[in-house]
Image (cartoon, rainbow, N blue to C red):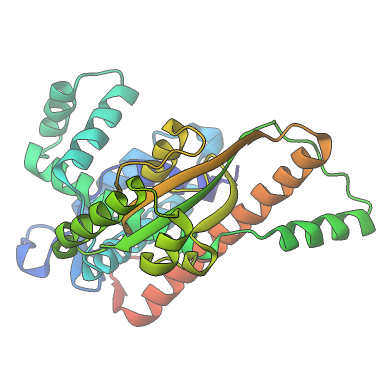
Length: 320
């Protein structure tokens, strides 16, 4: 893995803080202005100190490290602001889960995590606010990726043909489990739309329980692009859907319809139609190609998102 990717991953795992211009004290210098937020020198130096904890072999030179840290803080700030403009938010339950996960990774209790943050001058409320911002940023990135990273069978066929022409051997990946499912989505990307969307999805579920064809319901009600196909999502494997959706699918039996599932996109009903182990050499090679294309599309989508945000938002770097 390249140092840039390692550093980015490390910073994404850290909690960060941005403040409005009115909150900045004169004793704290400004490292950068990103939209309507300010990154202070204190925040910047804290992030640099965190990045220096990476093993020496994985760290870029000091000047490059500082540049990468500041760029990442700016990017995160722009993404969080974009998410809030879209009405995205993190629930208290989501924050609780993220804090608990961070504590578990460090092999300490949640109370110990809060105490450690307090020693660094970060209150419990501030830590939870930073965690919520990190979750909003994650949701924005997931939206961009899911909207642009689907891979068709035709794309897999074309990639395999190119590899064969070029004499490139495609390794067989593991034999993952794949799912064939349909879903119905009632959008609720903004918090004020969640309750109404939940009411609608429950009414649709009641119709499904009475025996109405799931595909017909999807064509009539679903607000997802798969609606014309009766909500059919085709075959997909683990890691291709947002965690809440994936978790619900994994718990279903063939032919079963889920309870309403809430994700950052809204409320879903999911019907699992089939499950398979991708076990043949050909299927494993296809899965290897599919995962590769998906990763390329995900990186491209993330890059395009940041480019659009930089082009549409005022950014002023105050340090060299």
